[in-house]
Image (cartoon, rainbow, N blue to C red; front, top):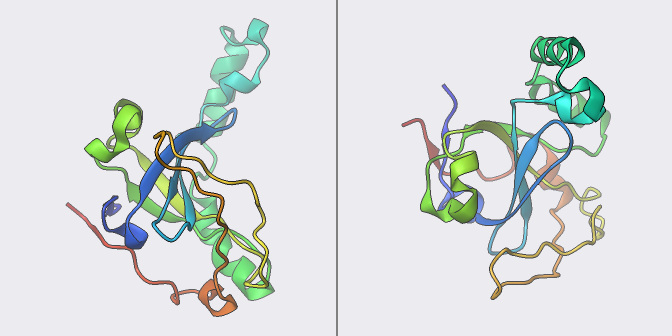
Length: 169
């Protein structure tokens, strides 16, 4: 059973900023009080939106969904330790269940009780520049930040980041 992500205590407290995602996965962008950025990505993939409109209601869509469900959605969990050993910059995901929390605000109906992975947006190994210099803006009108904080190189080694506060209930 995956632990429950406690938004008020995990990683020092997470503020929900915006919904994200591409053609297969939905995600939720979050930020801590010290501007570290995290993303929660659903492990449930739906590749049908990547198909042309003419194929979305055909057997091609059903086959695509079937083949996607047979893939290993947890591959990122297995790959992270290998990339650490190779010294390759990467995200280190952790599996969680998103709680039915009022802090999710307008995203609550979509993300409550969803299984997904949380990962911190990586930096370039603590050399002073973030991979993404784009600011993350809150969905609340009162919050806008442009600060980009790097994590020291030692923090990129497995087990050196502080453990998030969570529970399995």
